[in-house]
Length: 256
Image 1 (cartoon, rainbow, N blue to C red):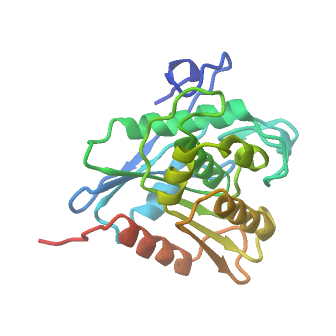
Image 2 (image 1 turned 90 degrees about the vertical axis):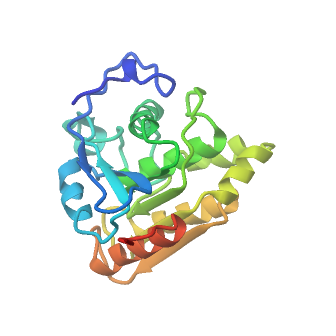
C-alpha cells in the first residue's frame, strides 16, 4: 500500500509526494498488549525486519514494519533508494531534511493512530529508522512536528539501534520554557544500543545523541555499548531489546 504526504493529515502538508512502500505486520501470538512500529535502515525494506521480529519471544507485541519511500539520497550522490528522509551525512552533524523527517514521522503516527485505546504504543528502528524513532520521541514531548503541526500519539517506548538524533542542535532551544515538554520527556522510556566498532554511524554519534537526550530531560534512558560490534545487530542486543520491552511495557508473556 502506498501513501503520499498530501494525505497524512496533521503531520506534513508538503507538496512533494512521499510514496511509502509495503507495510508488513507481525501479529501477536498471545494477548495483545502493545503495538510497535519498527523502521528499517537506509536502502532496506520492512520485510527484512518483520522476519527477524517474528522470531523474538515477545508474544504480546504486534509489530508493524513499513517500507520507506524510494527517493534520491544525497549521501549516494542522488541515487534513489529506500530512505525515510534525505541525508548527506550519517550522523547528527549533517543538515536536517525537516520535510522528510516530518513526513515519515507522520506516516508512523498514522499507523499507530488506529490501534485500540488500551494498547501501549512504541516506535523502534535501526540506523536511519532509529533516527525517525528518536525524532518521533521529540515530536511527542514537544506536542508538534518540526513544521508546527500537532503530534498527538501517546508513546510508551522508544528503541533505537545504531542510530542518531536528528535536529539535535535545535532541541534544547525548542524545549526551553516548556514544563509540559520536560514532564513528557521524563516519563518516556528510551533504549539506545550501539556497537563500538560501527563504521557507518560512528559510536560517538550514538553516544552524543544519548547525552543530548539526557541533558534535555529524558531521564528514563538506557544506553548500551556493544564492544567490537559493527553496523549490525547481534543476539545479545536483541535479548536486551526483549528484556527491556518486557519490563517497560509490563508484558505478560504467554500466560494462560
